[in-house]
Image (tube, rainbow over all chains, first blue to last red; front, side, top):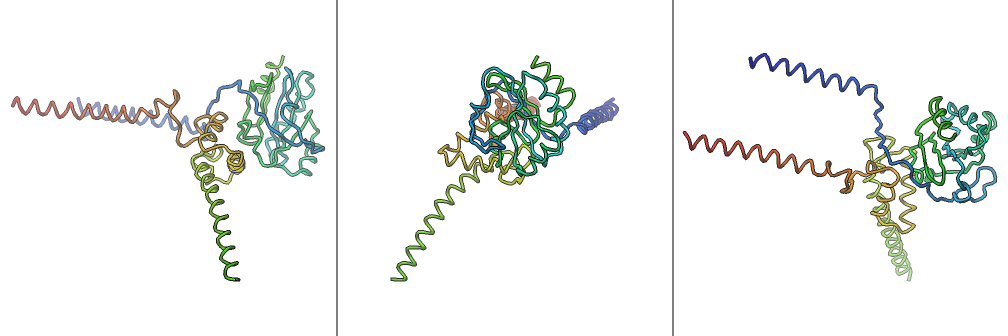
Length: 172
Length: 126
């Protein structure tokens, strides 16, 4: 009896291990911890994209309007993919799109906007990437939906149809 | 006179260098205890990703602003959670993490103790 249980146990264990690892193959290998949402937006100073005037975050996010902060760069390929969704959202009246130009070359960034059109109501510069860290961002592209100085949704990576729909639902 | 000048300048240079080194050392120590969230498995100090490079600049900035090591950790924990620290503090999210080794130790100890006692009993009985 003892000799029979052992092989069955072995096969059972290995099939579970196989199943777990096989499932794991499809998962991304970058672990992103879930952070409590509804955190307050950071306070920071930045330069405006075109005029290079100094602005504070208090002057950007005012009142109870919806703001969509999008971190982008001209060298970032997924940013090009999500651009059409931002253009779509820019047509919505009740939502202001703020761009954060991340570690970019000014001429390249300007050409990016000329070629693909400008969905942003305002853009500020983040040349050394430290403002992105203030936001708790990982890289580009990343999008934050903000209302009443609180982050109500955080999107890591490019926007897609589904996320666009979600944003529209949230800002109804 | 020339020798004196030379000595003074050398001492001055050493002084400047050492105080600069001290600040740099603290910065390195902090960035070594931060996990790079883009290239996981590397510390921020070891990594050369955009994220890690920005974080290095930020740590330097915060140190210049007068924040100490602990304050910087708290600041970053607020933004990214415990995951960014290689040495997370004791909180309700990390009870399990910190207590598991102790529990395992106690549990293992209990098993061994039981075996020893049983063996002793059997020996005495026989």
